[in-house]
Image (cartoon, rainbow over all chains, first blue to last red; front, side, top):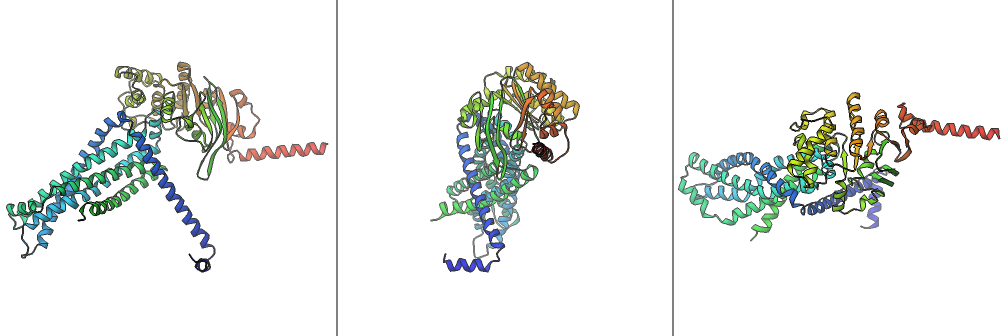
Length: 275
Length: 267
């Protein structure tokens, strides 16, 4: 940057403000780097905890039920209404110049490729991510995590790995059910509320169906499960400051998870869909 | 033996420990007193590796805690019981599951022996028959006793108590004090008790150390501490108001300066 420009900036900004701005930038930079370092350390501890299979093995099954099976109702509820709306929207878009069976195509493609994984992911970011952050955050501020360590447990093997593994394994399962539910309610809406026959809908559904679509949706949802549980565990375990801190960690988890889902959605589209 | 050697610890700009040194001999109960927020709990968390020192070290039986490998640290923790200020019981587990957690981790006892050890430990803290209760169903005093039962179930060599009587009514606090004494007699453990409850300190302690401004201000037997002439320690143990002992310290300096002045004028 030219020296003249810096001089101009220095003279343009009132004196008392400049040091505060610089100090503020410095604080934010340090804060960012500290957060980055904490996350790096968290990942290192997580990797070390993987060796303690005897601890996380059994607990993972418990978490698979809590994170996966218990999330099915909300995922199916969202998918059911999404399928209905999709069928009606597709019918609204399809004009007389376009074959009506494309309603089935649009419902199938959209549920499998995008709305099934993303809407379920966003819902689970709230349900699962917030739950993990609140639970681990409360354990942290009430010294339960410290107690685990003094009882010679590795908190990463006991608390984090079971949740992350359960997220990776169970999110695709939940999303698979959500996809099926969305397509089913789309078919119900199309055949009962619209002038589309069962044969037309199924024809459209099959016409552009590729097994890759299902794989794509499930890979994406596994990455969502990984991101949501990891963020929840990290922010939960690094909670400071009592109930307020737990609330802050929970809110951040939901916000960061939702953002991460959209980033990963774009990432997988660029990586796997670009031809 | 537990040795704190020139321990320094800061959290951001807040320097909590600044040269904290103390030796706890085998078999004794050392009580560490001091104002709230002066780093008493911070100091004992170094013993089990929950915190790492910025400088100095803590050694347990000659082994420097911060230099231990994860496996060695796990082995060390198996010899130390930690009773947390608010018990830190696991909310989703029953009393028996809480007490058994450390035993199950060790995998040295069968389930029958674990159940027996749990019952013994609960009996030792006068909570026999509470195995199936949840922590939410317990009073504050009972929670602390379950926390103690969890710590002694492992038959530790060392017991660390973080403010065991804080928040309890005087009678329940006296019960906890008795338990600490009884546990020491029954198990022969070496203990560190963090407290600012002087009645408790006099009851359970063999020696008392006062932490002030990040370092030990004075250490001595109960009798020595009762008879101390240090104004800061006196103010604390007598519970006289003042700003963290600063008033007493200032008064002490003024007295010393006055005495020096008198000596000079006499000369």
